[in-house]
Image (cartoon, rainbow, N blue to C red):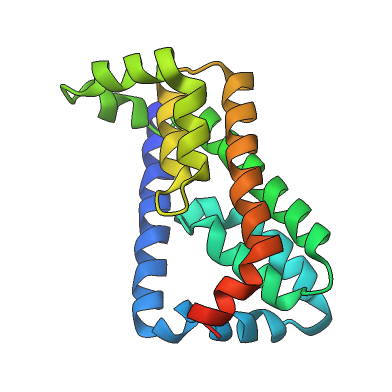
Length: 188
C-alpha cells in the first residue's frame, strides 16, 4: 500500500514539474522579474496571500526561493522585514518537508545506487553542518538539493535546520537589504 502511494505521489510530482516546465516554456515572459511582479500585482489585495502561498509551496515544483525573494523586494519595497520573515519561513518550511519526505519519495534509493553515495554520506556525516550552511548561502546552487541529501543520509535534524536557517538568513538578508541596488543594475 505504501509503495503504491509512494509511486503515485512520485508520478504526480513529476507530472506537476513537467506541466510547469511546459507552461513556463510557453510563458517565458514570467521569468522576467518585472513580469513576475505584474503577475503578483494581478492579485490586487490578495497579493500578500499569493506571495505567502508561493513561498510555502514553491518546493513542490522545484522553483528556487531567491526569485520569490526578489519579487517580494520589488512588490513590498517598504516592508523588508515582512519579506524577510515570509521568505525565511517559506524556505525553512520547504526544507523541513523536503528533509522529512526524501526517503518516503524514494530519493534515498537514488543515492544507494550510485558509487558516490558513500562519499556523500560521509561528507554530510562529517561536515554536514558546514556543508549545508555553505550550500544554503550560495545563491547559484539549489538549496532544495542539499535538503534532499541531508534527509536521505539522516543528518541530525536540528543541525540541519540551524545550518539551513543561518545560510539562508545571510543570503536572503543580503538580497533584501542590499539587493535593491543589484537589481537596479541587472534587472530593472
